[in-house]
Structures are given as C-alpha cells and as structure tokens.
Amino acid sequence: MSIIWIVPAVAVAIGAWLAWDTLSKEGPTIKISFDSGEGLQAGQSQLKYKDIVFGTVKSLELAPDRTHVIATIATTHEAKPLLTEGTLFWVVKPRFFAGNISGIETLLSGSYIGMLPAANPGKSQQEFVGREDPPVLGTYVAGRTFLLKSKRIGSVSVGSPIFFRDLNVGEVLGWDIADMAEYVTIHAFVRAPYDSYVHDQTRFWNASGVSIKLGGTGIDVQMESLKALLLGGVAFDSPTEAIHAAEAPLDHVFPLFADRETANAASYTRKIPAISYFPGSVSGLAPGAAVTVHGLKVGEVTDVRLTYDAAKDEVLAPVRYEIEPERVVGVGKRVFNTDQESVQALLKQGLRASLQSASLITGQQNVSLDFVTDAPPAEVTMDGPDYVVPATEGGGFASLTASATELLSKINTMPFEQIGKDLDGILKSTNDMVRGPQVKKALTDLAGMIASAQGMIQRLDTKQLPELVAGLDKTLTSANKLVLSLDNGYGDNTKFNRDMERLLVQANDALRSIRALSDLLARHPEALIKGRPAGPLE
Image 1: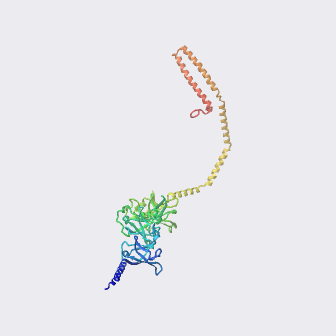
Image 2: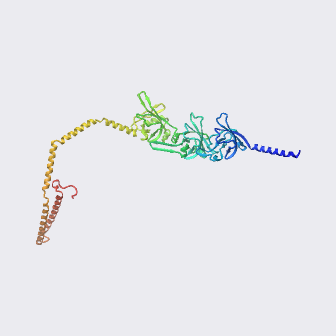
Image 3: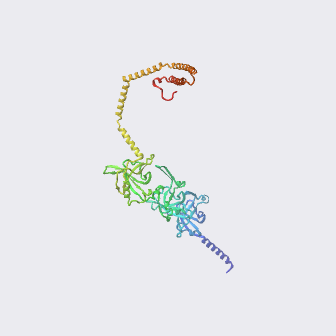
C-alpha cells in the first residue's frame, strides 16, 4: 500500500474516535411539557441539577392540542441514571414561593430547567411533565410524610410551615384533589428527628392566621408565628403519655382539626349524649358553646333548634349537647356498667341544667350542670339516643333579669293612685290641724312662758353678788382680828382656840362656794331656772 493512504486512514481514525467520543458523552434525548415556554430559549437554556449542567434545550414546540409547550432536551451521558420515574422538572426563574425568594441569579444568566431526581429511582423515562412551581424540598431531606385529612384547607398552602412546640419542623408538600368531594388530603413532611414525635395519638390542627375568641374568660388571642400568619401553617402535638409510644408509619393518616382546642377535645373519646328543654329564651346559645360544671368545661353543645310539641301544643327549644366524663379526673373511669346507670345516679343527686351568661358584651350563653338541693326526684328518660336532663331557670344575668322583671311586675300592681289620694288627704288634715285654734292657743301660751322666764332672769341683779362677797371679806378680816385677840386672851392650846380655827376653815369654804356661785350666775344666769348646765363649765 502506498504511503499516501496513511494520511486518509489516520484522518478517518481520528474522525471515528471523535464521533465515538461525542456519542459516548451524549445521553438520551428527553421531552418535557410545560404550561408555557416563558424564559426558555432553544440552544441556550440548560438543564441543571446542583448547578451542574446535564443538558441543553434543543427546541421548543407547541403541542398538537395547543395547551402546552414541549421542550426537547439533549442530555449528557451522566444524566441517564437520573432520568427515571419520579424525577421532577421545573423552570427556575425569579419568584416568591413558599415564603422564600428564589431564582434571583437568573436575572443575569437567564432562566434554566431545574431537576430533582427521585429519592427511590424507578424505570428509565424520556417523557416528563414539568411543574409550574419548584418542589418544596429542593434536595433529599431525612424525614417522613404524613397525610392530613380536612374538610377545608383554609390558609394552608404549598410550603406552609409545620410547627411542633413553636419550632419549624417541616413543610406542606401539597395535597390530593381526588377525594375533594368529601375531604382534602394534605401531604405534610416532618423532618428528622422531629418525625419521631409523631405517634398514633398525635393531633394536627390548622395554625393559620390569628384566632380571636371573646368568651367568659375575656379575649383569647392565639397566633403560632408571623410566618404562619402570612403563609398559613399546621401544628401538632402529642399527649404526654404518648411521647414514648410507637412512631407513626410513613403516610399515616391523621385528621386535621380546625384549632388547638378542637384537637385537644378529640382526645376525649367517651361521650354521653344529652338533651334539655329550657323554659325561657335560648338566645346566645349556639353549637360549640361549652357545657360546664362549677365553671369548668365538661362538654359541648351540638345542636340548638325549635320543635313543636303537639301534646302540649307549644313550641320548644331543645338543646342537645355531649358530656365528656373523661374531662373530670376520677370520673372518666367507669363506676357504673352503663351510661344510663351513671345518669340515673346523677339525677338522683339533683343534677339539673340551666343557662348561664358567658359574656355580657356578646350575650353568649353556656349550659351549666348543677346539683340542685331538694330537687324533685327524676327518672331517666330518653329522647331518641339522648338522655333527658331536666332544666331549671337560668342563673347569673338571666336570673337577675328575671328577678328585675318580677320586681317591676309587683311595682306595676301597686295602687299608686289610691296611695296618692290617701297622702293628699293626710296632708290636708295636717294643714287644717296646724291652722286650727288649739295649735294657735298652744303657741301663744308657750310664748308667754318664755317671756316670763326672760323677765325672771332680768330681775335677778347679779351686781349685788360682788358687794356681798366684799362684805364677807370684811367680816372675815374682823373675824381674824377677833381670833387673834382671843388667842392672846385665851392661849393657843385652849379648846376655844381650836373651835375657832375649825370655824374659820368652814367660813373659808363657804366663801369659796359663794364665789363659785357668783361666777356661775354671772356666766349662766339661766341656771336659776334650768339648773346647772351639763358638761364642763366655761
């Protein structure tokens, strides 16, 4: 062979090697359908996973039915094991989703197709349906998914947080719409290790927004977090006795309750249905109102409606409610063989139902179960499946209103017109008596007595008393001189001298008494008539 053929042979060999190298690096060509081709460009947009390029968009075509766009992508050889059932695709672009802002980097580089391989790879696949929104979990995260069934979703959305004792422990992945005629099934993902706290007795409830309740205890405001307020959320908790129970399996189904209170009430499984016929108005009483004993909740009202009693020919308002004996410590355990025996025992102790006001502002009422002293005996009767509990007149504000009404009724029955006439007659008789001659004569006599007393006081010459006192002083001086003379004549130790000393002492006491009398009459001349005034003398 001529050497000239060596060059073409080498060229063919190099071309074959290049072709083999190119083909060996190429992966399968796949097709992904999207609702629109917004942000994608043929020959430029790439397929990425963890920022590694696994292919490039070759073309964008409108589907034959014109409802979606088909993107044809040439993938690399490394992408082949990732293209299986369960792999997710979506267009990465700037967006606000699940409470986060993502895709900001595409403002400069342009949009691309994101990929998330399935956690459990299935069969290889070349045709896929893309998502409009990215998956909530952008990569594999340890944890478990549980199913929550609810009549309505409320504010819960894809990406809404899941809380366990105020900690964000998971996200809502989405929901199924197959059974929406009856309920909605929500997929709730709880990350490890918090998924180990989910047990068969765990209760999930809707923690979206703000819950505001106005009841007898005041205003109750509950909010799980600001994120739950904006995006909606779900919370869960387990009873203390269930913390160490077996973990709930994957995809275990739980009911989603409307709020925490409803979720807690669901743990009371034993319920005794009861009904009461109240004699007065049941305004303010609605399903969901509390049934209380000593002010503590032991049940809940289930139905309030009107019914016609043909036998009594009257319209009644029966109130149906459920009593949850497990709420009462020590009573939740069965003491009687049947509920009928327990109800009979309570009725014998005077159990009666009444309406109690829970809030004067809203007019809300509750059903109160009380034990009435000296209540007439009552036997257990049934109204369908419900036990009949006799009702009594309501207490609290209702009782106050009834008492006020009764008082007003009694006041209205009083003969005010006759009482007015009698009072008018009494006043007239009194007026005639005051103007009569007897009263006038009595007043005239009284005026005369007062004038006589004033004349007597004026006739008393209080100026003579000081002169009398002065005369007594002179007499006392003369007596002293006489005593001195007698003492000189008869001696100091004679009987006469001692008698005279006693006489002088008595005379001195009499003088002081006269002075006191003089001072008293000078200040209170009326003492001659009225006597000595009571109290200390001024």
